[in-house]
Each structure stands twice: as C-alpha cells, then as structure tokens.
Length: 121
Image 1 (tube, rainbow, N blue to C red):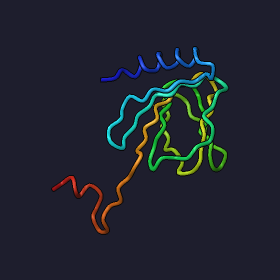
Image 2: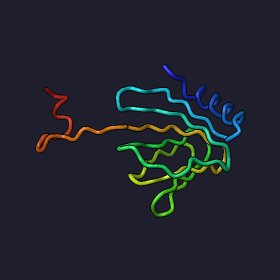
Image 3: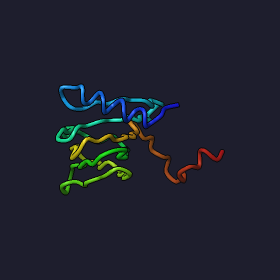
Image 4: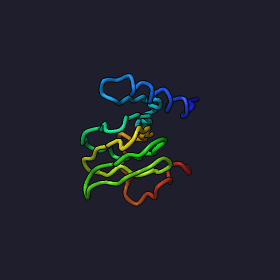
C-alpha cells in the first residue's frame, strides 16, 4: 500500500534537493501499467516527449501546463486530463506534484468482440 500524501511530500523534498528541480518515483509497475509521482519546482519542465499508448495526468498539488498540439492546457490540483496522443511536455507554473498513470502497451481487440467480453467468460 502506498500513501500518496507521503509520496507528494517526499518527492517535493527530493525535487528541492535536486540540481534540476524535479524528482520522480515509479511506485506501480504491473505488466503494462505504470504509475509515477513526479514533482517539479516552479519554472522547471519535462521537455517534449512521445506519448505512451494510453495515459492520464492527475495534479495532486500545484499548477502545471500540459503542452502539446494546440498550445496546451493549464491544470491545477484536483484536475485529471488524458495525455495527448502526440508529442507533449509538462511545465510547472508553481511547485507541483502530478500522478502519471500510463499503459505502455495496448492489445488490439479481435474484430467483432465487444470490450470486456473476455472478462465475462
């Protein structure tokens, strides 16, 4: 079991101690599922990078700008957004901590098989 409040505090402390003003901790790694807490100090950023097949970003503390096609979107604590399926970045507008949930692979469904059908067998 993981306490998110403890992770938020610890990652902010680590970011403040880092020369780069950021810190990340992968705390769930289960098959293709990854959950990572990322802390960024105000003014720092994650440069533009490729998107995984599926991902979301939840702001746990602070205010960030998710950059990408169309200029991006500002998110504050409590907001959850899907990560664009294009190159994107993340800028901290104030000291911030986010929860990144990513799926690194997605199996394609067989034609004509409704989603969830395999789970009902």
